[in-house]
Image 1 (cartoon, rainbow over the protein chains, first blue to last red):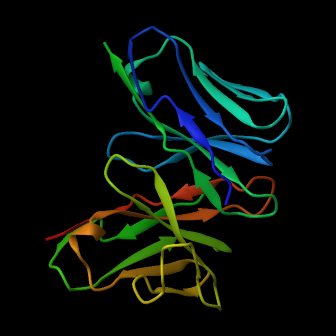
Image 2 (image 1 turned 135 degrees about the vertical axis):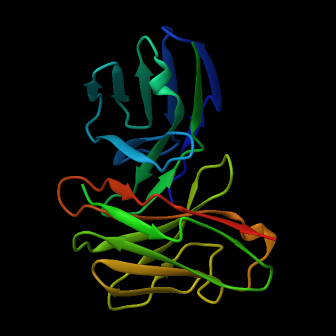
Length: 111
Length: 115
């Protein structure tokens, strides 16, 4: 399956600071998804990006898909304690429903 | 979105025994998946549970160790057989949507500890 590298592994921010996590692939991706997993919880789907250069926003969250469809980012503006958790990117093969998850970025927010 | 339940939510088992985890969905779904998530790690796909046929296993996972049943479109089971402490993990089932997106909805997970 397709491989994706996610960085950083951990991020500690002060409440109100911004946060970004990145996913990179050596191959062109058909799509990329983002999930959030709260501590002790299960992954919850956030969004899917499909088009080259696509940018989507959900309140304070901004998702980008690179022009070459080989990388993606999730940016959170003015983090809050409710943003705490691990953010995973996941990639699916064309025509396949199976997902390969990145290693995740664990976000800690210091109040 | 689908509502997914898993049983048991957690269990502590002895080495050499087997545990069957159940996954129930509130609507009929074609795609069901089983994942393993070791503490602090990412999700690793074990297999795709196919209704009416054998499950499709990922590299490193075999049917003898992780037999899967999918008797209908709303239910699946994963058995962890002949357990060892290395099988201690969270096991999650998920379902996929068919149209527009292939995002997955996850059950709450089963936390397994093997002594």
